[in-house]
Image 1 (cartoon, one colour):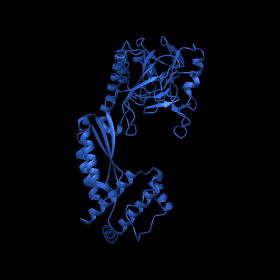
Image 2: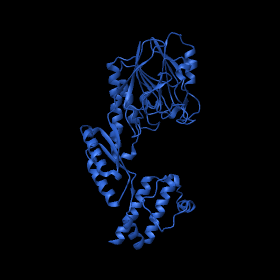
Image 3: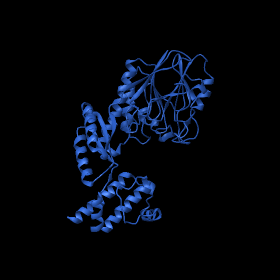
Image 4: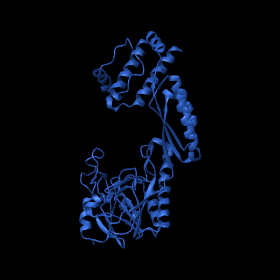
Length: 408
């Protein structure tokens, strides 16, 4: 039997620039998760600790980080460690981070896999196909077929590579497409893959596994925060796979609908109250949707800001729209006809850009044609497809603020 840990997509050194100074803590959380996973590997006395690509964010990360990681791996001499370069950190010659000084004199229990090869693990073989560039239309797992052909038929064979599973409509042609039967095609008992950031274990009869990123890095990645602990009894035996949690932080995206504000407040308050014990280790984003008056949207923002203060990171994504009552619209058209027309134009641009229906009935106003909208944007080199609901909402809010200032 062989026991090993399969991880991937650590992307150490990720910038997280959207979070400002707190990006530093997010980067440190990834290092804490890496150490936690190595502790687990040592405790379980694994035969191999495999990183299936993208250990680092890119080949431009700082020397201090490379030194820290190399030292961390060196501190676990009883854990055989195998590091496969991925598309974020390809083994691409002298400029590759794998050629830097900290990796020049690593202990023998650490192997950087710089070329396709089979490695004897003692009772099993690790067949590896690293990446040497950021993009390719070639399937990197094809090399594993040639490697497997020269090995004993009764040996346990574990493959490792990096790329997108070739699921129609879910991968790019130049994103290292891996055949969905890559494990069985090469006669592998397990194929350790990295690239996508969510846990995926049901491909090729359960023999192709993507463990996802061990430390969450996006609100879109909810099935992550694990490494895969794998046991294989013998050749052709089904792998036993355990998702072992290692994440330092948890990420949560919640919704507040202005159209049902009272119910949304109650639900959101309860959800965040339940999360309060873990607030210091939680990244929370509240998506504001629906339509309301400027005053209601402003008040809701203030309420959300206070509610999110206890959390490590609390963020509001405003996808709401401003709704004016019929009386407000009539008043706006009577007192500020030019502003009323501009508001109607923004509504029409919103419709063309996002397919969202206008937030107010602008009766009596001339609608903006598609050509006119494009002509308005082209001098600024802006296309309709580049506009987001958040940008259009902010534009409405600025316009209405101008109206209020003019009236005061």
